[in-house]
View 1 (cartoon, rainbow, N blue to C red):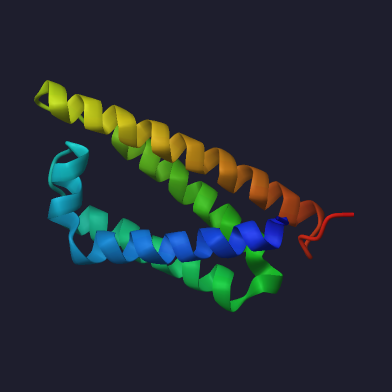
View 2 (tube, rainbow, N blue to C red; view 1 turned 180 degrees about the vertical axis):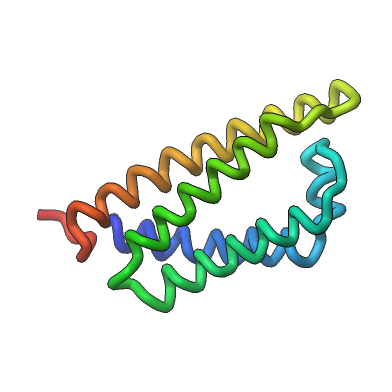
Length: 124
């Protein structure tokens, strides 16, 4: 699998996550164990949709769009890191979300670096 293929997968992931954040912010925040902030979650969802659409519609600019995902990941990590769940279940869910976003961030950074160094995304 090359960087361009990974970027395409990240684009589809962004569209799906963004749609969830826009359509059901309350359910998502309850699931994650964080304070309900629908406007913020919808804004993050719009950001995800924009990044996903950019990756899929402009493969030649995928590096830019994947780097935009990295910036978004930093916002997500900061928001989750500042969350103050009120109960043990919420704390566990927030910790799991932090772990998942950290893993996605690593993938985003590696993909963005690969695309920056080799825009076609193909292996040499």
